[in-house]
Image (tube, rainbow, N blue to C red; front, top):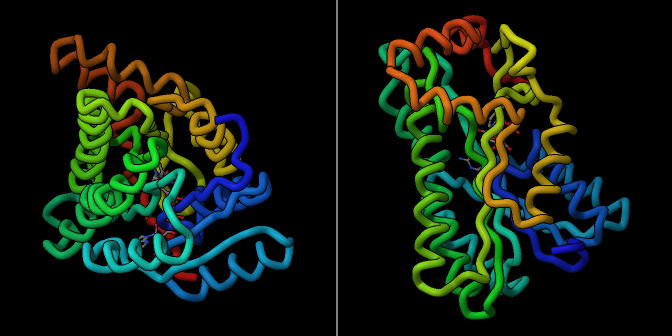
Length: 271
Ligand SMILES: NC(=O)c1ccc[n+]([C@@H]2O[C@H](COP(=O)([O-])OP(=O)(O)OC[C@H]3O[C@@H](n4cnc5c(N)ncnc54)[C@H](OP(=O)(O)O)[C@@H]3O)[C@@H](O)[C@H]2O)c1
């Protein structure tokens, strides 16, 4: 895909962080962006801001932790805009605390938003993509979908699920002869959007990424139809580390500071 002009691009969690930056970038290239979020105020703010700049944006209040909210909103989107060209599963939540300090409800929400919502949205939009013979499904997962760390049991498990979903979906689409439907999975280390406020890195090999840098790389990966984007590139070391015995793997993770990365985590501050 060379240009995003006139493409219909749906972004879940599109009212803040990299979702919002992606929306601005795609809209500035002439795409029609369709943004979902569960908070009315930030959605209205981006709608107004992009509208004032003459960019095409439509917003929908949708709680992606609820499958029926997803299916209902998807029906409205298809009725009002027709089939979607690019679906970006970006909404995400993190609790950031040890397993025994989080509630069952928090764990369930983490899975609902990070792992299950991409499956429901894909089931909602894929049939129309197959019918037209084109489409692109993007999963914003995480480096935590490749390597776990303390304070991330629920988050890492949900992102492993998201990575597994993309992997199997890509294979299944090919197997069923739908090669024209592309998939991209994105696995970033920390990005300074506020979601992981207080998380840290101990090595220049794994720098904390700026939202602008992460967004540029994601947009480029989608444009190129890249199947997997690891950010920074050194995240690829995880695949090599997996070839080593588990104690050596754990020792390297400790040496890189991955195991201490969530010690100072506070998460997004209210407001
Ligand atoms: N920041 C990082 O370090 C990092 C690293 C790796 C991967 N990621 C992933 O990147 C994606 C974007 O994160 P970000 O850093 O840009 O953080 P963010 O600004 O907090 O974005 C997350 C978005 O998801 C939305 N969301 C959460 N629960 C929702 C729900 N039930 N229904 C609808 N929308 C919901 C949020 O909307 P509200 O704020 O209105 O709830 C927000 O717009 C996430 O999937 C995250 O896991 C982030």
